Amino acid sequence: MNTIECQVEDISQLTPFVYKVLLKPSELVSFKPGQYLNLVMAEDDKRAFSIASAPHQALIELQIGAFGEDSYAMQAIEKLKTSQSVTIELPLGNAYLREDSARPILLLAGGTGFSYIKSMFEHLVEIKSERPLIVYWGLRSSEACYELAETKAMIESLPHAQFIPVVENADEDWQGKVGLVHQVAMKDIVSFEPYDIYLAGRFDMVGAVRNDFVEHGAEIGHMYADAFAFI
Image (cartoon, rainbow, N blue to C red; front, side):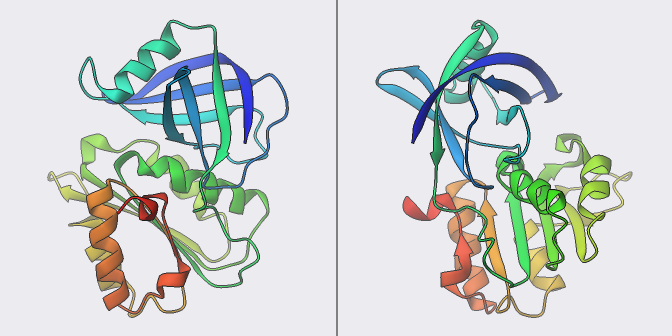
């Protein structure tokens, strides 16, 4: 793990509750798609965020969902807003993309867990992967969606890839799939046995998905999520 100083290049809002942060590291950084970093708030206060950018990109992107003035995430956003530079630690996490595998890939995320899978599919596009790839992103409502058209175009530029956004509570304008994202995936795919599966979202969600997916044929040794270390 390396400790790196980064310039805060930009902070913008993707939705009223999701912030996009761009950091410029002071030196070359190395990480694997799907890993995360610690934002150093203080020596005894380090906060983990998935890296949304792919390893080949010059800037490190974070996508931080922040609710409430004094929340864990909003405190990090306030530090980023008021600092010209910050300290990060990386790389962290063992749920990174297994590039030595030839198996089809299933990426599934809820909410801002999207940042975890974004790093992986952007890397797969960069290397022009020919592995079959299905990307599911679950959200509570269509208002929580962002960058759908760009994401669809990027993923489906690959020869054997598709992007499937799913919302739980659809309004009349929503034309995509509706329901709990992992249940939609289970309806779409007969068996998960052939897949390398990568999961991100709330810990309770990831735990439930793991159990349901194993019953649907998934091999536990081919399922990856940082949450598995804590549940």
